[in-house]
Length: 85
Image (tube, helix red, strand yellow):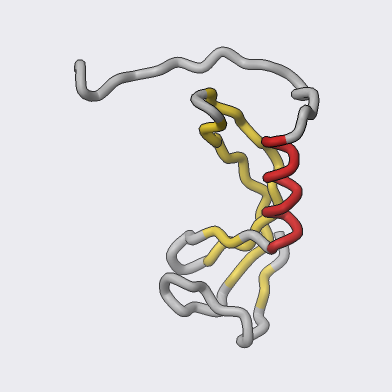
């Protein structure tokens, strides 16, 4: 991972400029179904852990989720309902 020492780029949550390059996985709810997107490039704050995504990445994820892209694979997802536990 690359560490970002550019003091002009700061975390929107804590204001730290200690950011690093990361690849993250996120689950999205799209029309009532859960979809996992893996290996999303992001910047992670080394102080508080907040993730930020650039506009190009955000648009790529949006298109992937809302266009008729073919999933790489499917997985089974366990669901727990805290309201009934």
